[in-house]
Image (cartoon, rainbow over all chains, first blue to last red):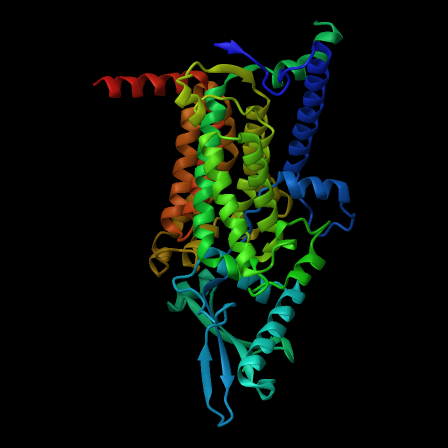
Length: 192
Length: 300
């Protein structure tokens, strides 16, 4: 086998190679330190502002894992989302809630759709995403059915929540059902 | 005691230790294959997640991004532009797999991973972060010419020894992935991981492939599995790193992630992404053994 440091030996004179190797070594030490620092978990309650430069580096280089699915127990057993629109005669019609194309919420569930809807609907830290989605749906419905559709539609979420093990062991009921509906007037959701 | 100059040279000796370039080639090929699979699974939903007609408002995504919104989709919002982005990425991944224009292809693949995670932050999953970290590490690793299409066409099959810095950083990244998961549970204690009920709840959730009352019958076993998972997360990177136990580490890690994929649905890409990271723990004798085995099969 032949020996080459590849990055460091990409042609050039000896001093250029040395400078290249030195820079590479500095980068390696920095990134290794960055990774070791990344092992320390973030304190969600910490009020110390993060460094924008470090955040930018993390945005590109990653570092931390984001296994949100197993941070704590998943409380949902099932999730279904749909749009319900009331027509001029007062009849409800049901449609898919996925844009573009009003396609239905996938069944069986897909991981990306689940995390999207879960974060949008059930994690209140970013309400602007849900509000923007509801505004967008309103705009599309108005373009298709006229402006009178405003206030006569809802995003309806049917969810089954897992009961505590002690309760479900006692009476055999594993889940409890709940429905919530959202529209631009009620972005926080209401239970009918 | 060695002189201080020897201590100062320790990082150099560690990062620039010669490694067989075929290990880098194996990581490159495995990473590009799984990243391409991820892209293929994203393809049907590309307009939903990335286009201006989709689920997430670009202005809101840009406003909420921290520290900045860094995405190629800032310039590509139409359905056609999104499709073009994915096609260019697919081409880059094929080039990366084949080792053609490796550095440029790896750069675009990193841009892709940063971009789609920034454009659709609500739909990112655990394996996206793993792939992005490895996209960065593949970019800064020696590209080499072994196991590339041009080298195979030229008939050049003599592997070189190259700097091992990329592999060291990849192995460290794997250690961070597992240990951060464990430490975050210690730092922010979760009652269900602590009392052993996590696995029972997980198997009753919508992630589970077969949720049902059977979970109650195996509560004791599942408590043991909850604790075993945490022990495995501590042990896997250590076993992988030690030369003598690396195959045991790979076996334990495969059992953990295959178990997750078996009992939960739609997490196959998570298993594959984690298996890509294990390739970085291969040693020269492993690839040499594989080469001999392939040679015997071809001869036989």
